Each structure stands twice: as C-alpha cells, then as structure tokens.
Image 1 (cartoon, protein in one colour):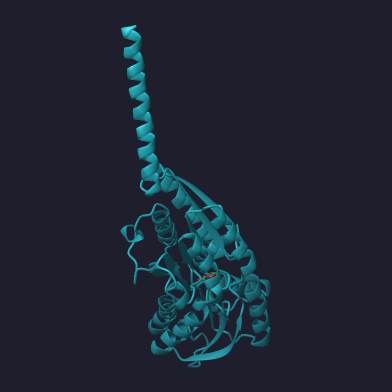
Image 2 (cartoon, helix red, strand yellow):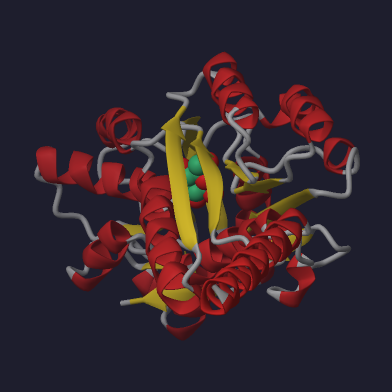
Length: 340
Ligand code: BGC
C-alpha cells in the first residue's frame, strides 16, 4: 500500500513538473523568446525579373542557412504579383490573415504603399520593403517598416566612372571614331521606379564631370526588360548606322537586350555597353567581352539584410542587433564595379 502511494506521488510530481515546463515554454513563446518556427511572406512585383529572381534565390539560401544555424524552422511563402498592385494587396491580406510573422515586400507600385501598410499595421505585422522604395512619408507611418536596397546614386556614379576612367586612360577606346564626341544611347528602366531617374541623372553627370564629351543620339524606356531593350536597340542601330559608340543602360538585362540586337543584326562595331546589377547573366556577358562593365550589388548581403531584419522582427527582437540601419529604417547594400 505504502509503495503504491510512493509511486503515485512520484508520478504526480512528474506530471506537475511537465505541466509547469509546458506553461513556461508557452509563456516564453508568447514573449517571442523561444519560437521554434517563423513564417515569412515574400511578395515579388514580378517573379520573372532577372534581378528579383536572383534575390529570391538568395533569400531561400538565407532561410536554409538560418534554420541550420538556429534550429528555428522557417516557412517562406513566396508570391508573384505579376505587376498587379491589386493582386499583391490581396496576397498581403491573405498572409496577414493567416498570422504570418512578417512580410518582405517588393512593392509593385511604390507610390501606393499606404494601403498595405495600414493592413499590416492594424494586424501588427512588420514589413520589410526591398528594391522598390515606398515614399518616405509612407515609411514613416509606423516604426515597424523597413527598406533594403542599393543606393541608386551610388550605382550611377560607379557606372559613370567605368566609362570616364576608360576614356581618361585611352580616349579612343570610348570615342571610337575620334571625332571628339561620344555618341551615346540610353536605355531606361520603369519611369515610376526610383532607380531609373536617379541612375540616368547621375551616370550622365559623372561622365560629364569625368571629361567625357557626350552627345546623346537617342534614348528610350525599356522597363528593365531585355526583350524591350533589344527592340529599341535594333531600331536605333538602323536609324544611326555606324554612329552609336556607347550604350548606357539602367540595368544589366537591358544591356543584354542591346547585345542581343547587335548579334541579331550581325553588327561587329565595338560599341561599349555598361549596365548595373552584376547579375550572373551580366557577369557572363562581361567575361565574354560583350559588356564594358557593370555595377554589382552584393546579392548575398542584400538577401541577408532582408531576411535577418524580418526574422528578428518575427521573433520580437530588435533588427538593429542583426544589421546596421540608417535612421533606424534603411539598409543600403554595398556595391562594386566590375570591368573587363
Ligand atoms: C534593378 C533592375 C530590376 C528592378 C526591379 C532595379 O533596381 O536594377 O534590374 O529590374 O530593380 O524593381
């Protein structure tokens, strides 16, 4: 009888201890200290954009590495808005209603972020915007809004310097016919994107300050797209036969489109082409001698910043312990020039 009582009391103590531990774990989880899993939504403006799909891949790698390092399971749900802000708003609403811990948003229309911000704010879901920067007024609506990107002016100055330095070393390598003028054409990204205008302005400014005697033949908007740029370049090559000496492109994909057009028309002129992004495809063109240069933003760092800010927020931690932020909101990735 005594023995039975003893066994029962020990069992009771064990049950109480287990219940206590469960309660403690739940309390910790509620405080966000011991979550064993986090759920992040990644919303892309367009999944088939080369630069963005590279960032997406790097984000998936970050998530895997983080799981291995911390033992915290990461659920990444990646959605493609196919350039529709309405679609993206619905995607955000759905993930918010499913209780996702944070959203990483590559917003379609950067001037209309406030709707999505309102939804996220009322549900207490932090948002890390990236690559397409909402206006400052919107980013100031709540303290749990962040932005990760590559500084557009810096990309442009670095791009301009690639050409200016080549010109200073050997003017004839850029002014191909040696007539004292460098005839250029310009390929621009979407008009609504902060990077397009700033990159164009500062690239030209840097070239002029670097003493390159620029003469614009023409320019056009190819919306970051290789195929659109290729169509434009084909027209220009026919319109200005033998005259184009330099192609300044707001990104690598459009620079690749210009190369496609030259190859299609079998143009062997040594036209210099510069891009921005340093995508694997861009780097390959550089190695094949088709590009004069490009400006690479560190894709691993880019994804590291987006992922770690979001993961910290999902765990209720301070993202500034993971990365250094400007004004508590912005993270700018490092960039470097690549030349052949
Ligand atoms: C990149 C482009 C990309 C665009 C998408 C720009 O910063 O340079 O390649 O298409 O972002 O938003």
